[in-house]
Amino acid sequence: MPASIDSARQIKKAMQGSERVARPGQVDGLAIRFRAPEVQALSASNAPPPEALIAQLNGAAGGDLRFHRAMSMGFHVFRFSSPKTAAEVEAIVARVRALPEVEQVTEDVRSTRNFTPNDISFPKQWNMQSAYLYAGSANLPSAWTITTGSASTIVAVLDTGITAHPEFQSRVLPGYDFISDPFTANDGNGRDADASDPGDWTADNECGAGTPGWPSSWHGTHVTGIIAAAGNNWSGMAGTNWNTRILPVRVLGKCGGSVSDIIDGMLWAVGLAVPGVPLNPYPAQVLNLSLGGWSPGGCTAGYEEALNRVRATGALVVAAAGNDDTESAYVVPAACDGVMTVGAVDHDGYRASYSNYSFVNTVSISAPGGDISYYGTPGSGIYSTVNSGSKWPVSSSYDYYEGTSMAAPHVSGIAALALARDPLISPEVLYFSIYLSSHDFPRDSLCSSYAETYLLCGAGIADAYQTLLTVSALEPYLLVTEYYNVDIRHYFRTGARSDSAFILAGNAGNGWRDTYDYFLAWRDASGGAQPVCRFYAKGPNSHFFTADAKECNDVKGYPGWVYEGIAYYMKVPKNNVCPVGSVPVYRLYNNRFAQNDSNHRFTTDMDVVTQMMQAGWLFEGVKMCGGGG
Image (cartoon, rainbow, N blue to C red; front, side):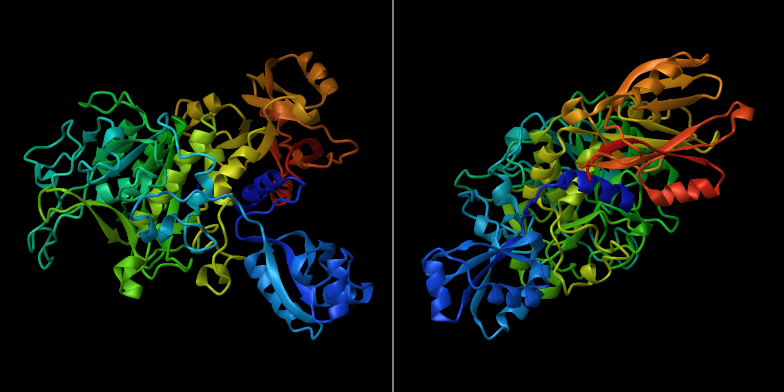
């Protein structure tokens, strides 16, 4: 978004809950065969190894192994108290293997069903395959056992337009060409209802003195294939999502495109009005922007306002981080709040040599982008749909490209898969589901070396399968967002999409900002959650929330306070202690009652509590308990 790391951690707790959950790339335990024949014989008789041997083993493993069962071939199976990543287990295995009593040790990796499509070029697509085979892949085969997408989802591709291709043509919706400059449009006119790509080839010096000419890129067609090429049809390749529909929005042509055209295209893509252009009857839930421009000041005011309006409709914006091997905080729209910004990795999961990064957390996540520049072979890139023409469209074809432009559509396709699994998911929860479900970068990579301090390359590598599991795990919950008004210095919490849409669209005034301090509530009274009463007082222009039934009844009797119903559901603490499986939500009061300006703030973050108390707010303790723990 970029999201608050603390909020992300709270939501991650809710995702994991209190159960042991093994995730792709994680290890449940170890299968060990000891050298002594008598110990191997114990396995054959379904008996554990001697206690002294188990203690010695645990000494090498850091005390985290428990005997689980005997196994065939003379092995015994041991379990970790909770699943570990492959990187964490690597060092443990090395220490255990060094024990003279151990003959062989192997990781007990959690396996899942895979669905391998029969497309003839699928072997060329390392980016779509299992994370066990390629650490830099998006882990699609297991995801496709859950869903291959839905025609009810729409992904807008804001790019060079697209050319007809049998991989996705039947699912292309009527788009629009937003390029207002006829030279850039290269199709003889300005804006029109034809979003097809006429080619973006250039002659020498056409884009500025000294710039070489280039053949047509068919960039939008390549991006679209990554998102939506049909799979398992004995032909061509497989995209991330085989059923989603594509809305082409043409904003790039010769020598690029203008921000004003891009912003108009974004707003139109989600169904908002643009002067002189008919309304879009097919609003998109996901916008893919494999584009960007340099901005010394970071996100511009125009992009910021447009992105808020797009988010207000419930759409997720996915953007490329850029290909300059530099800080992405100066690339727009990648640097903007409200964007899922995507960096690129190669097949082994290392940051691609060209990919932008960030020391200020503007990169949300990484995804397969390939690295032909480093490896020097086409097969290290991303294979997808193009056109064979060097200038104008000729015939459908395929080719390998590299770039964060190729990484972003993997995430857009995964988002569309998640929407197929839960069509009601909010853009914030969709963001977090992808963000928190990523698998790890290689332990010796630059991306991992900074992970404790900076999310240099984002939270991890996008993982389609784990994202779908996370979406399912978060179904009982509702995301409670927070907004702050810089003019009246008030905080406001809501779990209602209508409230968020109203604020983000600017209808509540321009002073409101998303704080990205979120927590989870329950959607209903399941699991012992209690209704949270919502009140509004016109005098201080403030809302108040409580999960305490007595306090709710008391406030109903206070003059000036209007009961607005149930906001969401939370658990109730006892003696300031939350039930197991929930996290404390702290309440603070600004103590400006004399100025008729009272306001409360609710947060799960103790750092926020400390900051507010230093600013003079009164700490009122744990007043409700959110999802997770």
